[in-house]
Length: 345
Ligand code: KG4
Ligand code: ZN
Image (cartoon, rainbow, N blue to C red):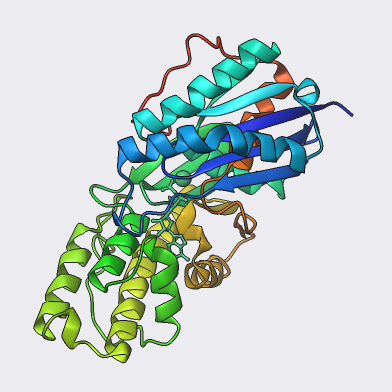
């Protein structure tokens, strides 16, 4: 069977990810290594582009070295280099692209530029090569929240996206209001386990509107007012903090699940795919799974495996696999960072 060995490089936001993946022509993948260098934003409460880019610059070569040694391959074994080119913070994308270009030229390897959001989706295919189409994808990360229709592993059509904050960003901002560290999603999820999701009736923005747009900025504001009305963060008991976390998480999940199921029914989707960092949220996965069971026809939910939820190099290599197998490469000197793109591009 034909296969290609791909070195995947991710540097679009804060974490540097490098992975070695073997992709087979029957759609299977073997992840030989998936190394990450995480950035610590506890002090800044978020990623600052210039600082993040500098850290990528420090981390990228050691991370590549770790990914190669962990997978026991040498540069000579690599067939193709894949790198994120869009969307993301321009200075961060630039570090990955320059490094990938330098390696491609000096090792004489072909190069493939990858769309970060498509890679989040493609990573779910790592363990599910035989997805039934059409599929509806809910992609919820720190920077994006969108519903996408897919008619094949390489055809993406945007159904709708957020008008303001992304779902992950809402988790991060609400966590910050509650005095919790960044990233906020895992912190909110942890506190929510001990809280009452019905304690606070936070709004479900746009849940009842037709169409597939989201908006999370209003939710954030109503939580800010709730904290203020209780006397400010310092006045809150641990239980109140947990209740706010649980109620906020439930409001976000309700909107995500409701909109996704509306898209599933409209598009007659046979598969529902959950992707992006927020898919690490267990309550979201459980509730979406329960909703998918009620559609009344054969429809399955696919979620990425642990380690593939949040940004990583393997998803970049996996996304590049169909093109790598077809030997459809990019000109290394024409690859440039593009901060914003649609999933339709
Ligand atoms: O996809 P990702 O790693 O990076 C982007 O491309 O944005 O997503 C990161 C986002 C952060 O906002 C983080 O708070 C959120 O995913 N996240 C979660 C959980 N784990 C990570 N949100 C909710 N629940 C979680 N367990
Ligand atoms: Zn991401």
